[in-house]
Length: 299
Image (cartoon, rainbow, N blue to C red; front, top):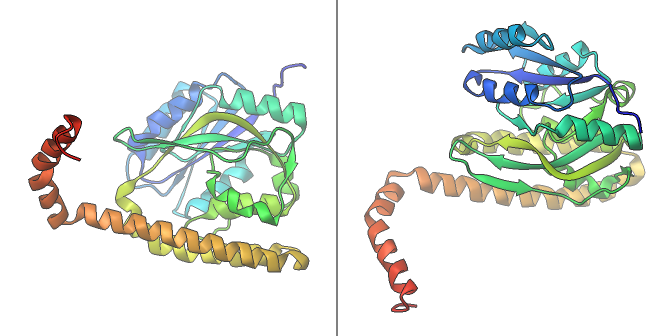
C-alpha cells in the first residue's frame, strides 16, 4: 500500500502550563510522520505561554500560534478544529506527550481500514515518574460501538485518538463548551452515538500527565459534569436505547463516585498534618518490621 501523505492537524490548547510545553512540543517535532501542522492555542494564559509558543514557531514553520481571551478548554479545542487544515485531527493537552511513531501508525491504519477514529493505549505519569498503563478491549477491525459500550469510552483520553476530520464536521461532533470537565468523555461518547467506526492499535503511543494535588478541588466539578454529560447523551440517543442507557449509566456513575471518594479520602489523609507526622514517626518501626518479616522472625 502506498504511504499516506495526508495532513494531520495537532490541536494544543494552552493555559498556564508553559513549564510543561517544551516537553509536549518536542514530542510533536519528534514524530516520524512529518506531514503535520500544530496549532498552539493560547487560551488567555498569564504565564510565558506566548514566549514558548513563538519560540517553537520560529524553530519549525509547521507550528502555528493563535491567541484569544480565556474561553475554556472545550471552546479552545473547537477553535482549533475551525482553524485546522488537515484531513485528520489529533488533540493534545499542553502537558502530555506523544510517542514518536504515534501519527505514523495511526494514519497508516486509518488509511488502510477507512475507519473514522484510531485509538491506542496510554500510560499515566506525574512529576515523580509514577506510571500506570491504561488499556481497553482490542479492536482488530473497524468497529461501531453501541450504547452498551459507552462505559468503555471513559478511558479514552483526548490524545489517544486520531480522528477523521470530515466525520467530525459532517456529524457536528464538537466539544461541549459549558462542561467544566469530562468534556472529552462526551466527545468520544457522541462519536459512538453517531456510529463512528473505531479501530485500535494495541500499543502505548501516548503519555498522560496526572496532577494528584488537584484531586480534591476537582471532585465536585467532575461529579456535576459527569451527571450533566449523561443527561446530554440521553438527549441524543435513539428513544429505543434510552432505558438501557439509564441502567448502564446508573452503574457507571456509582462506580465513579466511589472511586473519586476513595481518591479524595486518600489525598486528604496524605495531606493532613497528623498523617504526615504519624508516617514520619512510625517509618523506622515499619522498616524494622519489614526486616523482621524478611528474616522470618515475624509473621
